[in-house]
Amino acid sequence: MKLAQASEPPRRRSTLGGGTLRPRLRVSLASLARQAPLDSDGLARIGRRHIYILPTGAGLAFGSVLVLMLIGSLNYQNNLGLLFTFLMGSVALIAMHHSWFDLLGLQVLVRGGVPVFAGQDADFSIWLADDRNRPRGGVAVRIGPSASRPADIPAGGEVAIRVRLPTERRGHQTVHQVQLETRYPVGLFRAWCYARAEARVTVYPQPARLTLRPPLAAAYRPNTQGDRGVGADDFVGFRDYRVGDSLRHLDWKALARERGLVVKQFGGDRAEEVWLDWERLPPLGVEERVSLLCRQVLDAAENGLSYGLRLPGATIRMRHGELHKHHCLAALASFGHG
Image (cartoon, helix red, strand yellow):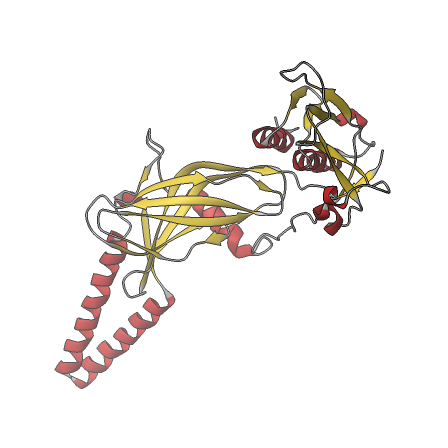
């Protein structure tokens, strides 16, 4: 069997802050915090007992300045200084209440995005809705190490926020909890809460750069006249270039990907079928075999072949098309994961 060179696989990205203590501490504290539960519609509503609030660095500095102003005004019996100190203290208290009310009553809905390959980022969409007819300002969403930019929610409206998570291995990237936070209105206090979620993104295996080209079998399907014909309209597969072949049938994309000279084959009702079989692969590890089969599925789909997939304990019958390709890739993603 020949080796076919594949296109450049998606590059693996490292997890942000995976080796630092701060993300681990954040995850540990989040597991102990109260979470807004999901209702029957998959929505989480933020209640009074779900919100936490603490002063930010700017808030602590602002409070320190107020204490110094209070001491100085009392020491020098400066009534104007006392008035200004209590005025700024009132502003801080009002800002604290606005930060807390900015999250109260929010509705949260989390949904997973389209499948991705291992090493790519998985997209999750978070819908935040207001049902109290009051605008919300500067609400950000955090999932694990990734966070979104603050977004404003109109009164009685909703906003969709997208958060991307890095992936490292095939399977499913799941999200069971999201964190909402705000520093609205002036950044003196940080209010945050946790909401339950049930969302996932399927992570396909990372395709191999090189793969074994499985043997092709010609399959003829009778047309309305009952013959098999040879035609020149229906694409049936690829073969190596031979001297004298028409340049119009060359696959220039394959040449650009350094796969050599490949010729497209056409026929009236002739198609190529191939079985992508686990047992026909070299004696490699599980992940290496899955990666090779992933590349074979992509190549067969790109070449317009009719193909089937044989895995230990599972067989996907021979078909073609975009839906069949994703069915096979999903089977490879979950293979060995129960």
